[in-house]
Length: 115
Length: 376
Image 1 (cartoon, one colour):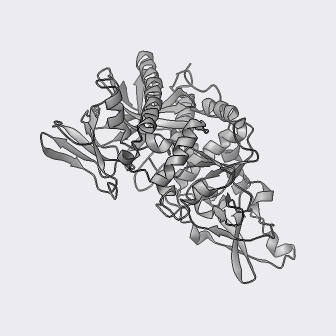
Image 2: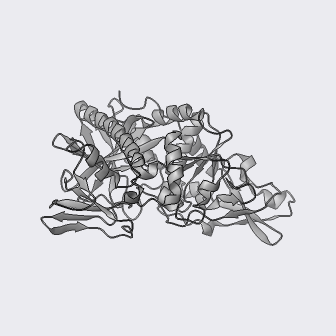
Image 3: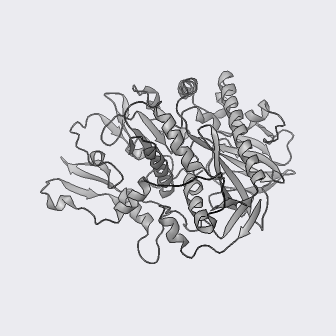
């Protein structure tokens, strides 16, 4: 046989499953004084499928990876992505050292790699 | 090789979405299961053998380019040469590539090699495999992509720097994200500790001279679905060589040689008249029927097809600044007005399976469809 015997997906399935969970809005309930802001418009995915019954799973998947961040000292800081597939420790920035890090130096060439 | 038309599954959209395949349709259908191709095992064995042979030839061609310092022919910036050579000499981790082949009348010809950022990995490894489970699970398919990816990540794990392996791609493309997340899925199953960071979220830590993720954790190994020629021309490009922790980039920098269509004339120089190659040159010379291809381009952009001095096909785009190569025309086979290209995967050092892109014309572009296959 030239085909894979059995296939299991651990990340993509888990991500989709996480997308179907009610959104956890902990910033509304835990007394955290930080204001969290969604920045959906910064990630206008293409080729997202919408089916007639409502929002497709692909769109839900996008929501899992939409960026999140917060305002701190009047500066918006990107902190991670909403996703059950990403370790919580890496999902929200807790690192107080926000020193000389510059971002945005990659990623300006195109909207898709497709090859 | 036969083209067969069938009725798609009633719930095919839901079936593929369940797999996380969200870009099956856009303005035009992309995944097309109203058709499949069937191959005899002899044909598949020939494609597999050709893929392994082309891989060996490609590695020899890289050595040749490095030995003879032919970087100008590839429009590779001089500042990248030390990293290209280092990544080659030290055998930095690499995992995959896709040869685009024309299979016709018992012949197999290399059209090009997507060695740096090949896509359609998920469609080939997962979506068509599950399609076959529904269509006829007793049939075979040239597709051990999934198990070979997991096995090779396990192998590579011992060579990576400590800590986690980052994965990066553009955030605007669901297709890129799906391919990247699929690769990450395989790495997780191989026991690697992984993190996703979108390409424009990568930070440069000026104080410590290293790339960092959103947690400001140093990036020590990074799988990128983002071409080298874009990386090196962006504002962080020269930082790649400054990074003190010397991260492994996967695919490594030496893939800049193989992902450039200048490799086609080099291969022809090294292996003249090889049955898997088409004559290819840096100038059209005596070619009368040929395809003019930009050294760097994607999805069939800026291709020009000439037959007896007349341009018969031409696609638009923004590529060509680096120059062109000229490859003898070997038309794709036609099946009911459709033209299939075989994308044959190399994973690690082995042929691993294939996917088929079917176009309405002789140039396979971003409107071409992915169709499944089986071994009859």
